Image (cartoon, rainbow, N blue to C red; front, side):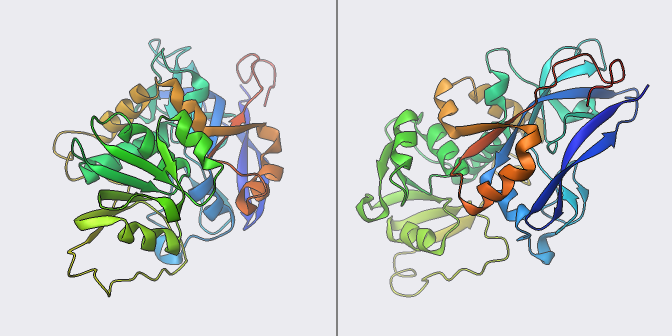
Amino acid sequence: MNRSARAFWLRSPGLGELRDVTLPDPGEGEVLVRALYSGVSRGTETLVFRGGVPESQFGVMRAPFQEGDFPAPVKYGYLSVGQVEEGPDALIGRTVFCLYPHQSRYVVPVSAVTVVPERVPAERAVLAGTVETAVNALWDAAPLVGDRIAVVGGGMVGCSVAALLARFPGVRLQLVDADPARAKTAHALGVDFASPADALGDCDLVVHASASEQGLARSLELLAPEGTVLELSWYGDRRVSLPLGEAFHSRRLTVRSSQVGSVSPARRASRTYADRLALALDLLADPALDALITGESDFEDLPDLMPKLASGEIPALCHRVRYTDLGSPVGQDGLT
């Protein structure tokens, strides 16, 4: 049986293409998934697209089903939602999330897919990976009831963190961004918005996700004495300067990193990666999170789309990719 599919590859920094793929037959303990949607995370994926992953991080930055090596050629991505066409009876026809690159069909182990709850639309489930990052960040940050909190950077990760923090009782919460257009997203999430100049200070916690030197410096300025900046930005191969003079030591400020590649130490003894992802998918039952999806295109348009996302010509939080092949399973009619 001829099992064909198409995949998006980064041919060289700044240049993407679609390639034909021949799939293996799914073996025992594997599933064949037909993609419905995938998501482009504008931060990390556009950094990969422009070839900005530093050589020291080539191993750390590998996606679970990546093919090829940085900087290119490489098949990269990790926000895929599809329907199981072959595999165990209990999964046939189920909508699943998988940390797979942009590809129309793929074969993976059963353990690599997570069933999307029925109350979560497939279109929204592409956010699962980013909401999972937000869950891990809040496990690291451990915010308390009544905290004064700012999220600096209204991108996909920052907005996801703000959306979850909006559920905490008694918090004073602001989403801070230099782009006034982010106010609309903040309000859709039920969060106050402020420009960097107008942001409220005296914060117990600032979550920084702007991926800018200026944003990180402003995050420190917004802290109360003994406050913490949780750093979520990924700078790739860029160097950043941080003002650690002046009152940094006398005010006993903390800058702490957080990264989704490992489960937060605060929950590592009691939660697995699967538990964390299942929680993220459950949280996506909230329709307010649709505000994080700011555009949609066909899979066939991805080579032309990625340079526009990387340059900012198309402003986006999460850009959704739609797969229009809704026909019979691969091999019965030659669909790709």
